[in-house]
Length: 129
Image (cartoon, rainbow, N blue to C red; front, top):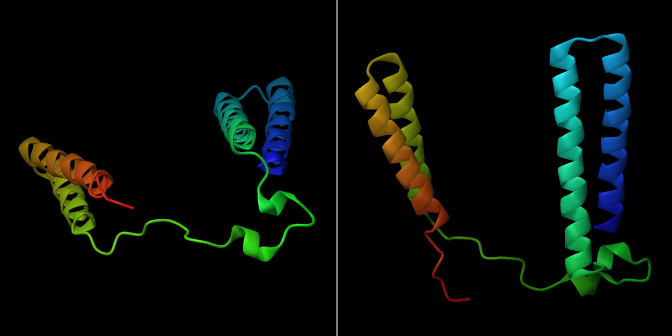
């Protein structure tokens, strides 16, 4: 993650310099805002990568002498099935119809969407590994 942190720090520096030049020559608020937000997003990603490197140390990908089998093993938990994506889609569809026809339908759609998202996030929270 150290290389990724340096990479995104370079991207942030590029956007910062580009933003400074754009502020000096253009003085146009939309472009200034876009370049500033791009710089901040690159800083956040760089900070995240640096913190993960400091917390977890080097990965096998970071060393030249590493072997392929060092990264093998179980990857992660992948859920077998879930009905919540269909319910989220139904809630979004109800919200879209509510924007067109009635506020009460929008509120029902938002309620269904939010409850389905919470269900999807916490569906396998108490699983045994």
